[in-house]
Image (tube, rainbow, N blue to C red; front, top):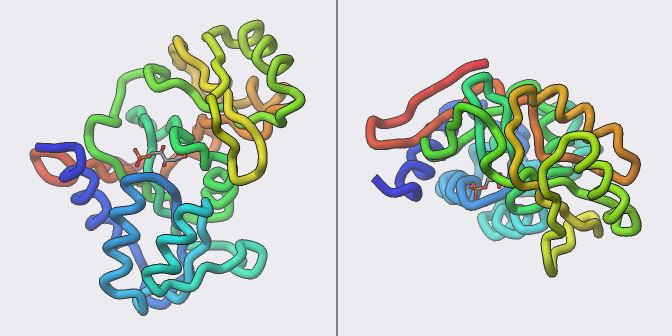
Amino acid sequence: MSADAGKRQAAEAAMTYIDNGSIIGVGTGSTVNVFIECLARDPGRIRAAVSSSEASTRLLEDAGIEVMDLNHAGPLDLYVDGADESNRHLSLIKGGGGALTREKIIAGASRRFVCIADDSKLVGTLGAFPLPVEVIPMARSFVAREIVKRIGGQPELRERFTTDNGNVILDVRNLEIAEPVKFERTLNDIPGVVTNGLFALRGADVLLLGGADGVQTLEA
Ligand SMILES: O=C[C@H](O)[C@H](O)[C@H](O)COP(=O)(O)O
């Protein structure tokens, strides 16, 4: 079975978590794009969406879904988003598409985070996927040195990429993240780091994995 088919299965399954007429948080990425296609079949199903990126905002608006500012939406019941990797405790690496900061904010503002992915994203130990770290541009060399000193790995500037917030991304390769919460806190402590792509302090609550045997549901 292809990864695309797995993504579609997971996205369809996430539709069952939506309460009719609610305002939901919507993430970013190819899996979420399929979820937005599912929403587009019945745009009146939700009242509005809070979007984690300019890219998702465009797709939601094209689908006839109102996009609301988080400041006006209040606490959200549900956030649906993809991941680059998940371990069995539902700690995630996110930010492959560079949307990690707004994603982390909306995940934090939501009661339930349902993560959707194809089953290749489930790993034993996080870190094979390069860990994205969003950084204030003037701090990028300093932050890269501090990352090597504090957690190891090889930070590389993501070329020709600026986040929706006007910042740059360092992708940190060669990490083995046995203690995601500790790593996340350590990275948060470096001045100049806006957000790191570890979602462990606030991981997913539910992980829906599409694959050859259908949708597997893991709960935190
Ligand atoms: O910045 C991007 C997001 O964190 C995505 O949710 C993540 O990269 C997964 O994307 P995809 O569904 O395309 O694998």
